Image 1: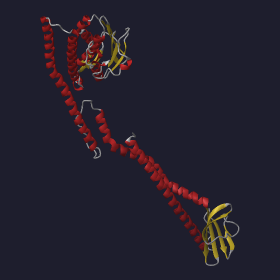
Image 2 (image 1 turned 180 degrees about the vertical axis):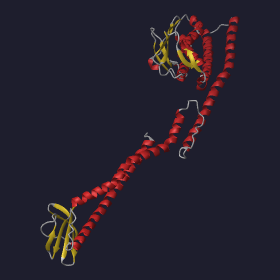
Image 3 (image 1 turned 180 degrees about the horizontal axis):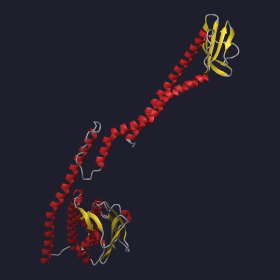
Image 4 (image 1 turned 90 degrees about the vertical axis):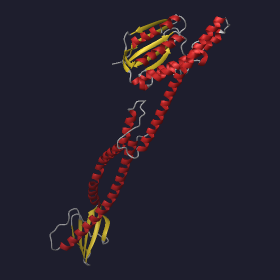
Length: 436
């Protein structure tokens, strides 16, 4: 879309140049006609003056004019520019050729005896007319740049409210949905601001409903889910005590389903806690390496139960500016996925490093990995590689990497996937800005 400012300035300048050109052209035509009439009038005056004073005055004819005096059809006087014979031409104005030039000729008559011929070269007349007209056009031409600058200033001033509105909207945070207020809003811009404010109101209400709904649902489901877990545990225990035969596969599937629901509810609660409103207020300098060691320690019982080998390599201290809860959740999700998908006796490695501007955490495992064509999809909420085929072996909700990506974006970082350095597996690389 073309800039409104550039469009208005270009159109106005083009119209200005066009109208100025047409006005100058018309002025040229009128001035040329007027100059020609004035020159003809001069010829008449010169002729009358010469007729009146020829015999009584020594006045020389005007320089640049050809003059002949004729009495009774006989040439009695001529100056150096006039032909040697009397010029035959009609009385009044006409254009004649003599002495290799084109002349504007005036034949004046006094009584029946005297005639006077006064002629002026057409080239001289046109040259003088052009000089006069050009002098009158110079101000118009030279004023065009000044007028263009004035148009630019006027249009820029008229569009300043649009610039202020754009700056106001650009400077806002994603969570700031308060009404837009500007001083001295022009009438044409008021409907835009009103429509924008109504949109903000609807978005704010929708976000509030969504946030409240997710929080309320997750909170309300925790109690019945806890009851279901306790009831299921008691039922299994009672059946074992009574010696009732059990279908271990069915009971395991039931337990996995309940566990998956518990994880889903916890993830929804965590998503609510990582809302941008909460995140912005809690950022501070943190040691990412120390936090990674703490998260590994929290999960070590799971790692040990699965007989997995884990190592932390690279920098011992790595400063980033982040929300502690959000950063801990980010590392916990990455480590939890690695533990979950790495087989018994597998390997997990965390590597901490830096680039010129970013801190980098690589989490690699020796699990089955993910096909490269699946990389863009695994960050979508509730997406699981292979659909629900993993449900019995590796329960999950499909929210882990979605939460990680959202947390990375909140910190202004980036996340990427690739093959791990082991014979198989996945490597997740997270980059966050270094704390300066």
